[in-house]
Amino acid sequence: MYSKHPCIFVSHGVEEDFRKTLGITNTKTIYNPIDSQKIKLLAQQELSIEIDEYILHVGSFKKQKAHDVLIKAYAKTNMSLPLILLGKGKLFEQTKDLVVSLGLDDKVKFVGFHDNPYPYIKNAKVMILASSFEGFGLVIAEALVLDTPVISTDCPSGPSELLPENNLVPVGDIDALAQKIQAAMQAPKDYSVPFNTKFLPTNIAAQYIELVS
Image 1 (cartoon, rainbow, N blue to C red):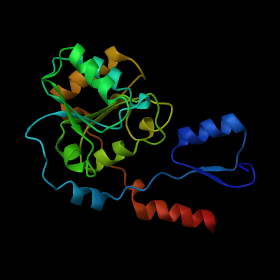
Image 2: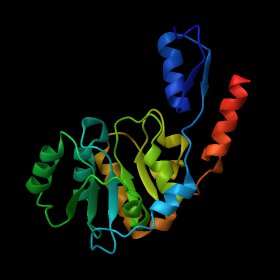
Image 3: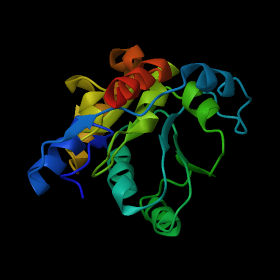
């Protein structure tokens, strides 16, 4: 089936993995469209927390997102800014237990799932991802729309197509992530990355039109 039909992928990393795994060549990467105008509009809503400065993680509590790596890395910083965790999932209680065991109750805040995460992203000093793998890393692109600096693990696909090397650390490297978080808390602007307009819906749509034409 895959060899007889064009296959479209959300990142070059996913495309390359697919080509190596199945040995097909009829492939093309077309990124997810990012509606920057809608994101900016939604980001104007008020926050439901009363914390002026914080760093943020957005994602489900599941193995892929590696909350354990994130929290252990955060514990190695001076924790000058609180860490806000936005999301829900089956590893929620396990993550909460880890926070308690490390004595971080007053520093790590769980705010649950929100249909509109953009006000949290907009007001964060830095957003952190510790994922073991990603396809594209949609939340990274959304953060860049809102001028929020992002630090991420260098997954096999996704983050390196959105962020420069300075913003990336090896997957699972707690010490490297801790050092990067510490540096980003001290100087968040050093990790600012402009949003690339190639992800805008009109530009993505043009690629689909070209493909079917």
